[in-house]
Structure formats: C-alpha cells, structure tokens
Image (tube, rainbow, N blue to C red):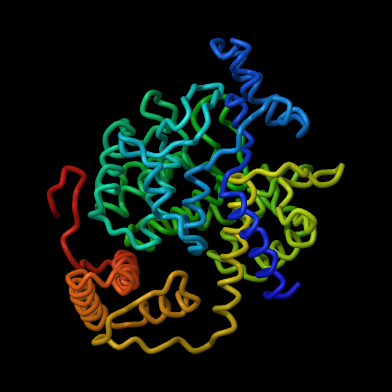
Length: 448
C-alpha cells in the first residue's frame, strides 16, 4: 500500500471519529456502567477491580448489556492536537481547554480501579495532564497561557514526590513513563528546572542492564510492554533535543532493547517484550512513531502497511483493537485504538512526505513565520528552521512576535492564529537548539 492508501484509511477513520463526536468506549471505563452502579457493589474495591477487568476482557455483548455510556476522553483530543510530536488533525483545542479540571490537570472521564489505587472519574493524573499540555502547545497555545500555568502548578506541586512525579496526587505510585511525561510537560512550560532533571535521572537509574524499563516500582509492575517503552524512548529523545546532556548511552541501550525484544522476527511490534500472541493496536501505533523518530523508516512503513491490511475494518471505518491467534479483536475503542492509530499513521505519512521532498523552503528572517491549521508544509518548514543560523533564527522570532502583536491590536484573529503557531514552533525549536528567545514564566508566576 502506498502513501495515498494510508492517507485514505487515516482520513476515513478520522471522519468516523468526528461523526461520533470523538466520544466512544475505552478498555477501562467499566465502572461507568449504569448496571454496576445500580448494584451497589461500587462500594467494594475488589468488586470494582473485578468488574473493570471483566468489561476489559469480555465480549462486546457484555459491554452493551452493562450500559456504559460513550464519553469524550481528553487524551483523545490531545492526540488529535499533535501531542507526542504528532500531527494536528482536528480543531479541538477549545474542547480540550474546557475539560481542564480546577486543580490544573486533566483526567480520564471514567472512574478507574487498579490494583494500587482507585481514581474518580475526571480525577487529574500525570499522563492525561501531560498529553493535554503537549497537545495545547502543539496547537499554538503559549507557555504563559493561564491553563498551562495552572497545569505546571499541578505537576510541580501535588504530583511531585522526592525525585519523581506520582501518577495521582493522592498516591505515591511511581510509573516510570508517567513521571517522565510529567517532567517533560513541566519543561515545556517553564523551561529547564531541577524537578524535571531529577525525574529524568531517576528513570535513567531504573533502566535495567539489558536496556529495558519495567512499568513501575510496585511488585505487580514488573512487566515490560512495547508502547510504554516507546513512550520512554521518545521522551528521552525529546529531552535530549531540548539540550539535556548525558542521555546518549541510555537511549542507545534502550533502543537496542526495544528493537530486539519488542518486535518479532517479522519486524512487527509485540504488545509485551518477548511475548508473541495478541498484538495490541496501541503498541502498533506507538511503534510506527518510534521507528520514524529513530530513523528506521523502512520498519515504520512496513508496520503501517501491515496495520492497514490487518487492523483496518473497511465496513465500519475503524481499526480493530488488536489481532490474535483467533483473528481480529473487533471492539471499537476511541482513545485506546482509534486516536492512537490515526496519530501513528499520520506520523508515518508525514515522514514519508519528507522523504519525497528533497528541497526545503527558504525562510527569510525578515518575513514573519506563519503556519496554517493544519499546515501540509509543517515538516519542511521546521527542517528549514533548524538550518537557520542563530542570528537569523532570533531575527525571525522578533519579526514574527512583532507581527503577532500587530494582528492582536487590529483584532485580526485568523492572521494572529497563524502567527501564534509560528511563534510556538520557534520557541519549541529554540529549546531544542538551546537558544533563549524571551523570558519564560515559572510555576509561581515570576519570570526567569
């Protein structure tokens, strides 16, 4: 299948998601069942855990009988907004902002019982908050926006423990990828800081001698799965691009583990390290992105084509949740499957486009930088930005910032949005290059 075929599948699924209002089912939403809530068993932790697992592992008929409503997940909106260095696929920024909690974080729209904790529906956590921050900034929201300042306060305050970020503010549960995500979100908002650096150092210490990371520190967190390993590698790569040093060895060792243990002999991603069987679409999506980012484009395209041929259901315009020895898992999960798959496919599609465009546009330092929404030239423009000298880069930032101020004063909002996306991109790439363009806000409102 060629790039056009991948685009067609991606767009069909995205259109189906939009028709559904980006609301749908989730593997972990069982406690929102009207049947279970009416039973009174929700008062018992063990009953909650068993019910969540029954819904997660059971057939679709059980889910329908349980009367679980479809919900909009902030993480779905964040992925469609380009979180995780993805591609902006939908204009859902205002919806994502509206779902922010008063404490500054974001959470899943369902209550959730795990072995280590219980979370109420919408309760803020490190992962959804970090994806929310990342998605908003990818759509042009600047670091001094009140929503991002509140998010930074939540991350640096209630989530912070001694050298790591907890998953929830009411528990000390340590999940390596969640702590790293929170540290990177805080870095994006306030710039280099001691807490993010400590969180990175702790994750590096948790790396095993073979290069892998277990999910967390509890006894039942000793497993290693493909997509969380991809999370960690991608985040360490982004930390390195922001200017943090000392990550090369961990990345090299981690990448070696990921390629050797999280893919089978056919080059297809495993859900869990060294274990074949059920192939989760979430792991497939993350694999496409990680392969692109670490330069294995052939591997990424191979996975994307396999997914298009084996995980796409053309009758419903959705991706299967996974595929196992008995065939495809036809359950339709909005956040866990559809959002991740269009996210991963889009990264492959954009990277393929880069490979087909040998010449980058010339960016003049005296012409304001603008990005459409979405901008098909984003990747080539960013490549041109990285090729600018420091002097020209700073000059382009000044010119773009001045133009944005003028458009704001005139009330020309459409032009302002395009310029704001240009400013945000300049700030992000400046961070990667180690350039300081302007004062940045801290979590207490002061500037540094």
